[in-house]
Length: 467
Image (tube, rainbow, N blue to C red):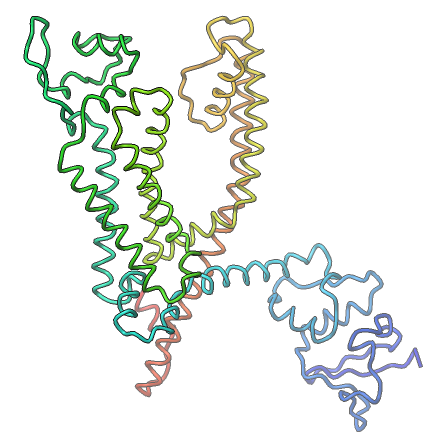
């Protein structure tokens, strides 16, 4: 009975094998075949399966050989492969290592589809809104492509972002600042009537440009940039624009949240998370800048003032709202999000070699008293060298130092290149999936249009003409 030759009819193609081969895996579909099976045809004494005969060669080879490994041709689609193995009851874990990438590629493509077209699709989010005004307001605030009004609002939003960032940069320029208090009348010591002229872009410890400014700077131990924020304030129109833009963003955030039909989904959106964070950052910024003079004079609070101004520049991240208008930018952000492990690996590896080469250059230059005074400076130099920036503020002078520099630069190129290639591959996968989906969407729209007009479909020609 075990040596019985049985016939398998797979989609009209006949395969013959011994029953003993199939009994090697009795828990599979082929291993459990009996004449009582629904697939058995008594008239022709064969088992019929309406499946793809080409893929069945892969299945049958699994029973024929003793290596207990499934070998798969490269041209087989991972989705079809998954369906076939599920039908025949074959475990995916037995796919050979040399062929397993075919299955993993399918898993990656499924993940791309889910992240790119399911998780980030908001076209149906407003379907639960019964109030038409609330629905229209939500579309204006959240979907730039929904209407002409939404496009105009989106343009205004981006203009506000640009103005807000521009104002934050202008307040650091002496041309856009005025005295906080009226200047004293002229005395025997020559002074200027405008602190914008007094506070020149020179460090008082190296160059003396104005005696009236340098003296208090030296006496108080303050740098000219610190004096800039103590003695002057931004022009009035800069403050007005800053208040208008900040009020606009706060109002937009509250309206956006109020009309949102799914509050949890709203808070899970990265752009909205950034808006909420910036709301609290703005409150901190206003509290600190209102006491700018006191904060800048006090060493204990000066860092808080600096911190508030630095994190306020996070407002430029609002530009990522462009992801709602340009899917390509969204793909870039998704790629970075999915490459966290690679980025962490890059950071850890880079840090290890930076410390290693930092100490190497320090001890290589031990005989040179003018370069690399400590290991921390050596680590700074190794980071600049490995990233190929090369400021040139610290350079080796000995032969051993030159050799260490060559090793550091070469290693840096190799370390940075390898993770970047992986990230670029992921971006290519997302971008290819996006272009494929976009083309298929155009084909479906054209098919509906041609069906409506009762015209013979010429999808490919029409799409090529659109391009």
